[in-house]
Amino acid sequence: MIKHTLFHRLKHKISLTVLISVLITLVAVVPVLVTITISQVLSRPQLIAQSADAMAQDAHTHVQLLDTYLHNRLRDVQTISSLSTLQQYAMGDTKWKEIAQKALMVGVQSDVNYDTWSLLDLRGHALIWYPMPPRVHGNALIQPVILENIRKSATAQISGVFYDPAVGSASIVIYAPVMGSSSQVVGVIRTEVSLNYIWDVVNSQTDNRGSYAFILDENGVRIAYNDPDGSVLAHSSGLFQAIDTLSPQQRQAIASRDLYGNSVRPVTVLHDPGLVAVQKDAHAPSRFEMVPAGQQETFEVIKVQMSVVSWTYFALRPLKQIIGIANEQLHSTLLIAAIVLILAIVIGVATGRRITQPILQSIEQQRRAYEQQQYLNQLKDQILLNVSHELRTPLTEVYGYLELLQLHRRQLDEDTQQSFLKNAIGGCEELQRLVSSMLDTIQSESQPQILRMQDILVAQIVQEVLELFSPRTLQNYALQINVPEALMVKADQQCLRQILRNLFSNAFKYAAAHTAIAVDVSVVDNAQEAVAQEVCICVKDNGPGIATDDIPLLFEKFVRLKRDLSSSIRGSGLGLYISKQLVEAMGGRIWVESSGIVGEGSRFCFTLPYANRADGRE
Image (cartoon, rainbow, N blue to C red; front, side):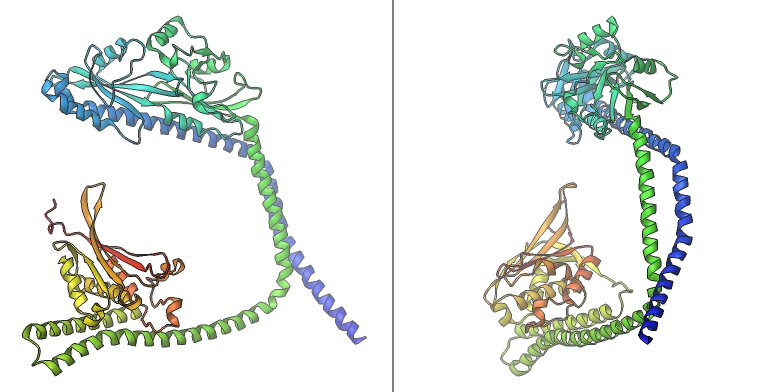
């Protein structure tokens, strides 16, 4: 009976907790979900309008890209036409021919599909060109009407579209006047520009869901077109089709200028009366609905007039697709609302169980605090052990040199004594520097180090740092020093000494005896400015190498590799961290290259600003 009562109370308690949690959840969430659902259903027309607006904005963005592209091409041609060498040669000064031809090379750019550049005289004959003779379209390099317009207006002109079906490429020709000293037109710069970029922009309007785009030129011919099924633009069957019957004058002009590849591919007529009416009506709306020729459904159409040339951009999307996008947004919202409801119920049911959460959290916090304290104690002991070892290394060297002076002073000549004293003083300076760096690293990084930047001979500083190591240490390795004698860097001398000492110390520490340790110093050239900017200093050993997973940790504070924790090799874990801070403070960068394969070793490199007065470079 007692067991039954306890079970009943426990069951009642659990049921009551769940019931209250569910009721609270429903009361709080259901009204919100109902409101969201109703608002989404009522806002469906607005979603459709927003989708159409987004399409219009996208079309305007495409037109802005096209206008910017054509404007930049006009600017390039006008810039070339204003070069004085071309002006002099166009006025008849033949001594400028070679220089003028080189000036045309300025127009060749790798990022723009220019075909060829040429300078024409006022009779339309090519005087010079680069890199190849210009192609003749129709019966002339420049049509008389275009040449006359240039002579009258002295402004750049853009030709119609030429098409080569053999390679599936189209292009336009841009002309710009070359002005003489008396502000008269003395020649014409001519260049041919591929339509590949324009085709790419039009192609990006297609989404393989029925949307497509095209461009009509002043003759009503589609010079850029992409089929709704995503056909390749250059071979689209709808390319170079006229939306209406061409007039005799237009057909004659097309034939004489060889526009649209007319000699091998006549312009076909699409007969799209709806599009013709919109194209001819200057007051036609920029957004409308229609059934295009060859289509069986209604499309939302966006019409945008380009500003640089008399072309019109059309973007078309099936109306059902726009409605479908709005429906998808509505369905997504409803699905999210349903998910929120389910999650809310689950969270509400779990509310009763949260009573124990504060207690469990408190216990967990105490456990973590205890483990953190244990970890900090172990880290403190390890840091003290490592730091004491790092301090002992330079101290031992100083003591060794001074002891040699005390015991063998009478047997040593003056130069050797001075060398030992110099090395001892250098070791003291390094010891003082190391202690200061450790204290600065452990205590605070808020006070930046004051640097004394000066021009330093790299070969000299490398030799001085190597002399800080004992002769026995140096004799155990095959040192390969490849440092140009006159090469100088801009650096703080003490900082550079400490960086090199850290790298050499690591190389001697990890590389096996009788292996090679290489020091390579080279100038890194900036290809864009053709001026040396940095000096790269590398120390290469043939030690055990560094695993790929450990490389990102090397330059952190107090980091020791896992393999070193159980070995006899000691270290503070600060050498590379300090080196990184010093290199970056002097405007350089430091990195390591290693395959992690034993015997292939590691290659530590860092860069410093280059003092270019050392080797006579300008």
